[in-house]
Length: 361
Image (cartoon, rainbow, N blue to C red):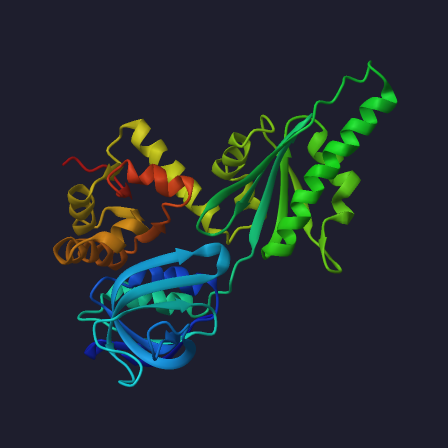
């Protein structure tokens, strides 16, 4: 969990110790161009032209120009111009990139700290890092694998095998099926070594999902730890089946604190309200703001990209909408555009609301 080391946000300053991937994602959505960050970093120093230079640790302060979230390497890259550092090694205006990761300690300086930015850091203090889910959609001779995190759905690969029917030769059918399963198992184990996977979901039609778990469930392990696996019904072995079990709430039933599954469910709820045409769903900043001012918003959905890219005028408008929602006991949901629910919300103006009662604007 993130640690707040020094809090003087009234005067624009906050110092934190980063602990996990969740912390990096929170900072990714909070850091804005023109903010400043200060911390220990490594910079290549070249004394004479033509020298390869040496990497030296130093404390630098930069003005933020760009922020990049590299989820699968547990890293947040913050690019900007140096405004303070050791004069022997750097000059003001030179560019530098901070590679922030768990155990990094930084001080953030903002012209203005929005209330909701501070609240999101506070809420994250007691939050534990959530492990990832590996999803396998499988049917006869076809499997698609994807990695689910709190913020994204990332397809990994497709595995295909031409399996002859049982009438062809029973032994041949079994050999081809075993080879197919082995290839799927190999991809799974490669990803278990690379990523903090806590659960494997095997979905698809018929008996293939259960059969695969029966055959290889005790072989899917990281070190001595056997990773839990669950079978879920889905329509096929295509990648679309992974979206299917994510959207229908089946994954959320097995991992209730999994953010990407919660985002899918709340986005589905919004679409259902919109489809009923009963005036209990609104989208767009103006409509959402008016409903929040009236105290009508039960759930406010907002894309992370909107928080990151809004200019000061729009950000003030968004902040007012967030505050009005929470003041009237509504819930705010920030959806990542790296997952299907966030992508869908983008098409509704990047902000939407589920209302407690009908509102006619």
